[in-house]
Image (cartoon, rainbow, N blue to C red; front, side, top):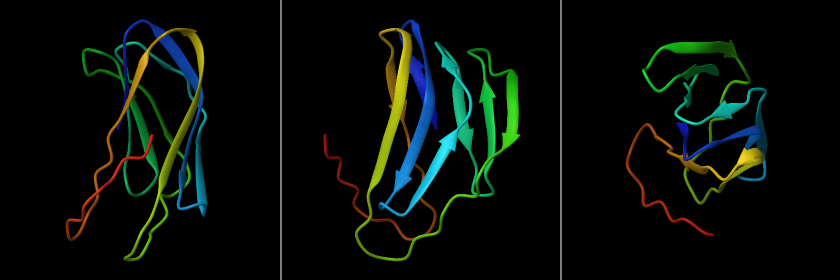
Length: 101
């Protein structure tokens, strides 16, 4: 789940998993919008009222095995100074997640 807090717009969103797979998201995201991607690669953007404003199929999310993995997020800020929130939901057995800044 990717969302913005504060005024602004971001684009050129990419998520890299374990220096292995890159997921490029060909959409811009504006204040109040929420972007979700399910395990099949279906991307949906909802506005601040929860109304769907975009839907498309992007790359299927990579499956990774047990062990240490990294997730890197990147985007271009087109306007404003929004705070980008990224939430990751993992299926299966729970593990400790550490964030490096």
